[in-house]
Image 1 (cartoon, each protein chain N blue to C red):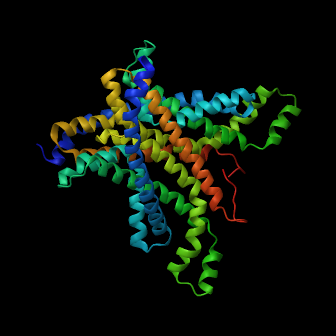
Image 2 (cartoon, one colour):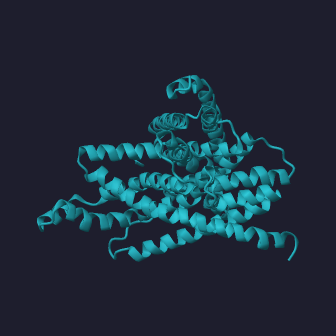
Image 3 (cartoon, chains in turn yellow, orange):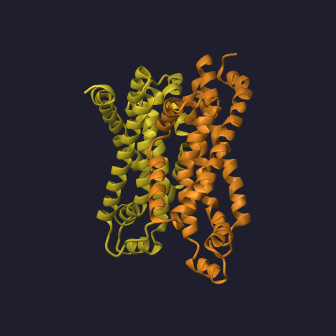
Length: 225
Length: 221
């Protein structure tokens, strides 16, 4: 193969594939960490004692208020001022998880508040402690209700993972930028990069839809927006 | 003086000039997004099937590709390929505006769909044409219902506008980075930029909340 097709298959694809693995290596841990952080922060905001509630609130306000790029720059370029040096990869995962967690917590909080009071009373009436009630009665329902919102957040995370390039963590976008700068084939390279992201996002939203169907409890479905 | 606060004090006027650039980028792309998003929303609700599908593809495209990739694709790739010599600032507004048009079309589409169907029928019954009914009955209500969605879109765009720094647009984030590279006071400068973004978000959403209270429809809460 020669010409455009040769360039795409022989030069572009191998490095983009390497970038894709790096992107997935950023997205998957950040999505998992972010989700658990969101459940933790969301629960603290609804059920925590005052100090806990307050600190969770500040966390969410700050991390939703700062642009993700600014957060990444703080972790990567700012922390060395305090003597903490993070690798580009660690700074990216930290930045993505913390930011994502703040957004997840909003959906979790909304879902927690939508569970009826009577359920808490009923759980306590059969002798469950407060923690047991939250873990076994409230959260399993709330997480299901929060799933559409949290799923959206994961889709956002896939797209925002491209910002890791800005702190020199060379993932899909970074690999693309390097090849494009060397060959001046920006249109071809970034069209292919764009298609890969589209595929990732489409597969993820299909998978999340399936997960929602899978976890749905008969009789507990609610209107899906 | 190269202390954190000294640097901050000296560079604040320079950073604040960046706020204007940020705001122009955000307001420009919000307006462009509305201008394009409105016909898309109307087309997706009332248009013929092929048009609906086409709009669906447009929305899928602009919602599925990261902003940074689109910025690179348009600024370094497509526009030079078409022999359009546009500045980074203009490309930033075009790309952010196109993405926003996809999101805004869905906000407006939701708003249009939440107007009860009877209103369209009633408008037709008193002799209005489809276009008249959409223009005078449906859209004035849909706009009001869409205000909270816009408030959300504003805060997303404001934060995304920081990414246009990758093309060299001299907005707030870029200026914070310029000063930081010169003075090595990265932490305090990025924190300052972050807080300015927070304040801008707060002010904008407050303004849109006030607008929402003024124009909201009674009985639709």
